[in-house]
Length: 252
Image (cartoon, rainbow, N blue to C red; front, side, top):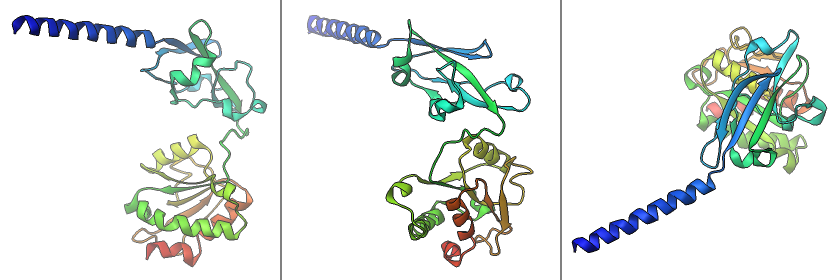
C-alpha cells in the first residue's frame, strides 16, 4: 500500500508541475509605460491574470488654461480623432484589451491635454444623477426604482425612441458633497442632478447652468435642489419635470 501511495503522489506532483508549466506558457507579459510630456510616470506589467491601473496625473503637468483629457496609445491624438480613444486616470488596463497594440512586448500610453472649454465628456441621450444618501437627499434605490418607469414614460411622451431609451442612464453618487462633486466632474456626462443641497458648487466644485430649490420635501429631506448641468433640450425638459406632482409621487 505504501508503494502505491508513493507512486500516486508522484503522479500528482508530475501533473501539478505540468499544469504550472502550461499556465506559465499562457502567461504572456506586456509592459505598459505611461508618459506625461516625455516623462515616464508609470510602468507596469499586465498579462492574462494581472491587470494594471492607470495613474492619476500630477497637476504640475497641467498648464494654465488646460485640463487633462486622458491617456491614449496614439501619441498624436487630438479631440477630432474622438474621445473614445481616451483612457481615464484610474482606469483598469486588461491584457486582452491592449495586446493588439503591443510592439516587442510593450504598450505605451501618452498623457493628453485640451483647453478648459473643450467638451470631452461621454455622449449619452440623457444622464440623470442622484445623491445616494437617503438621510440627506431623501433618495434611495427603492425611490429611484419608482422614478425610472415614470421618467421613461415621460420621455416617450416627448418623442424618445427605443434607441434613445437604450442610452438613458440614472446614476447614483455616494459620499459627502466634496466626494460626489469630484465624481460628477470626473464623469463629466451628468445632464441633470437631483437630491443635493445648495452647496453642490461651493463645496462640491460642480459648475451648473441652472438650478432651483425644490418646493416640496424629498420625504424627510428638506431644502433639496435640482441642477441642470448640461444644456440640451431633453435635459431641460427633465429638469422641469422634477417639479411635477408625478415626480413627487415617488415619496408617497
